[in-house]
Length: 303
Image (cartoon, rainbow, N blue to C red; front, side, top):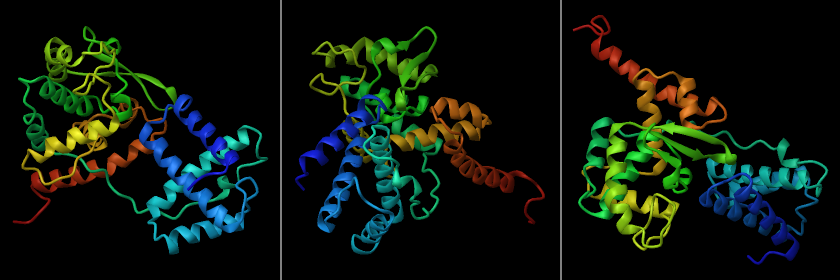
């Protein structure tokens, strides 16, 4: 859909704000752009202006998403989040008196437990890349970095070689909203990192890049590139699972809690602003604790 000039200007200003001030990933920004363009399209069909919508108009938009487009609750909730942020931005810029979307609540989402890999599954993943090649060394480091530090994929691709302190085994991370933190790493990641920096990185870095993860042409690896690499790796295993960068992050958090790490520490390591975002992992570990209890406690089950 071709946007009106004023609509396009407002949208681009908001997306620039998300990129340069909130430090959102390209993947998230593209989803928000698509969601807001769809909203503008609906308003144009109804003869409405985004600056003059009322509560009833938004209610009809939600009905349109649910009944005509057949969007599920998760998709609708994401679109509302994009619009809530957009209207908050407009209000802060003085283009609106208030954010009408702050009063709009999305449909209840079914709670889904985070998917994660078991220890033996991770071992199979780690043994898949051919570490005698530059690409294999990069891919092995990529797996280790996502799992051993729990960083987001958007954080991973922005890591520079200068952000890594191999003496203290720590990495500087610029997270969501330009929030800074340091993550620690251990011996396995140090081994993968040292191999890559001594060999594979020098072979790939034909453009003299300052970034750690590079593609075959020497350019900076993108989020889409990371997902493609993970898809290719899991195809070479016997694992019947989908894979994503966030699934390795989930595995990192789940395994920490399973081994007795406290929730507050996991929150800090993940870079969660609110501990509620971290508490979802307690459901996973509670299931794990029940399984251990029934398997090991002598009076849990009758013979």
